[in-house]
Image 1 (cartoon, rainbow, N blue to C red):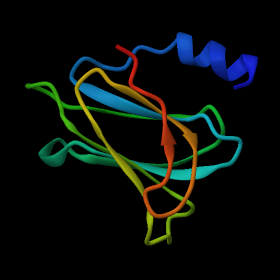
Image 2 (cartoon, rainbow, N blue to C red; image 1 turned 135 degrees about the vertical axis):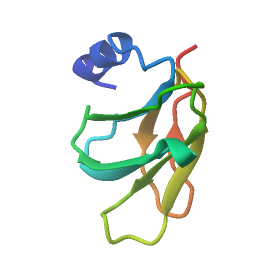
Image 3 (cartoon, one colour; image 1 turned 90 degrees about the vertical axis):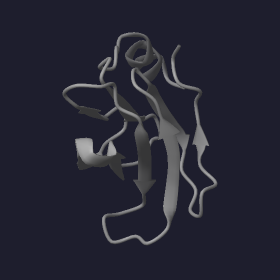
Length: 104
């Protein structure tokens, strides 16, 4: 991991009533967060980019997902809990991505 990405990893606090996903690969990828009834968010993230979901009321649980492009059918998903920051370290199709453990 580059020094810049490591500095980013140490400087982010996700919302207590939501979660974030961050692209720590070297390539732009399409990300989604899904907090169920709390809503969904989508964005193409460059290296170091981050997408968060926060909901009003109870803390959110949900999924973070990544795809090669908005048109891709296959990608990778991971469960996220309230307060999680989920980092993607390496992308591979068909749920073979390398994720970092959420910051505790």
